[in-house]
Image (cartoon, rainbow, N blue to C red; front, side, top):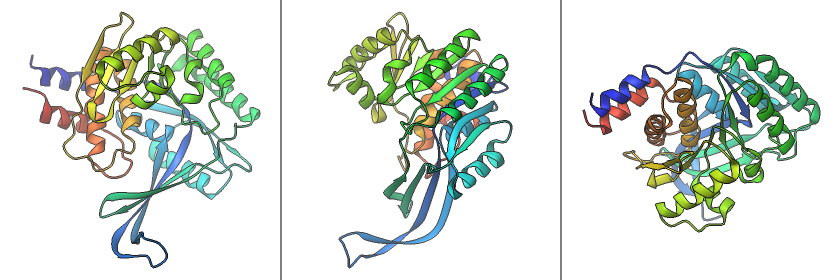
Length: 330
């Protein structure tokens, strides 16, 4: 069987699993327009906005990707008790559907990432958010919900964006539940709680996060391997997967064996959401019994395909097949 047919066959196995997605959800608001003038107030272009698009971001984007891949994601998160929280909750209800545990918190703004595009090129981003810790009451409700569903799910995906939801104590309780029910745990981390995620199945930092966490200045793949080895041993995790931007992706296993794949993308129009896509594909593939090495290859294609688009969009099995057919030998 050719490598192309091998990966195409693996994609047919995706879907049909329940997965908990725990983390910071956000509203991605994109403004699209044209620039034909410069401001008299500052040396900046004026964007004549022609349209506005609101999409699922953060952990909600991961859940939406898993839904598009055929799995059943269950979101666990908190939004603000504001208009943006209502919009975000409605998007979850309409696009992902199903059962979710999303609680509203008074006096907390819903996280919003507002990107401005001119002729399909991002020229500015504004963030509206709070990084204050989520109240204890919400955390307790989320843990009760997770415990009640744990016997029915195949994996937990943790999406940490440092927005106050994933505290060290909350993470430890999630991992206790995962261990009790023998669930796979995949983590997309941020630096604040890097070393709390002990014993997870897969830990996916980007190259900057890896460098900061290990104090290794990374300039080539050998440095990435060195840093990934240190991190994997410290966390006692099965796999460390490092996204390296234009240099592709690296996976290191329990035996210190590492494999890399180059980035496959024709034109980078907008990298937003590519990391979410990668961990979503990895989760779906691992739940389907696909090897981590093969899962990494498919996930790498998924991340590249998303970079070719503008705006936050979920990946589908057909998108993955198209990317593989363009790049793998038949």
